Length: 138
Picture 1: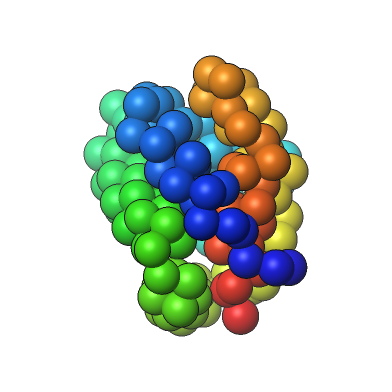
Picture 2: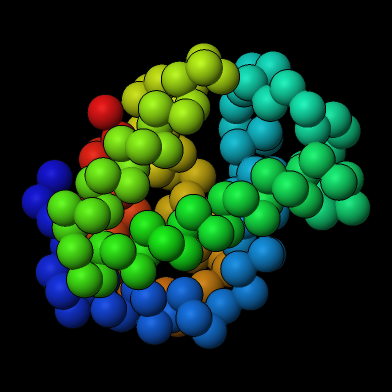
């Protein structure tokens, strides 16, 4: 997939800065567990439903929110830095049994979550940015 344009990346960061990031991340994890219950064993420590009241899920949510924030901001200024961040993230996930197939399966989940949690989301921009991020994981 071609990299997003600078305008698309900047629009996504601007929208990211205005949304309830915690709600988006929680919805993403709930979407993952609903669409792919077979993924539950990939998460060793968190138990129960993916909700912030569960300490281990809260930790996972916080790590994901911070990683997404860094990746989106990198995308807006430096595609090479973004690719490096995504490669590094993928390497950390290998030990958990996560593959490129898992990241590709996130696309429809993330699309649904974005359309329901980001009011007025520019889905062309979000799709270009997030799909490029997920496609950069190898």
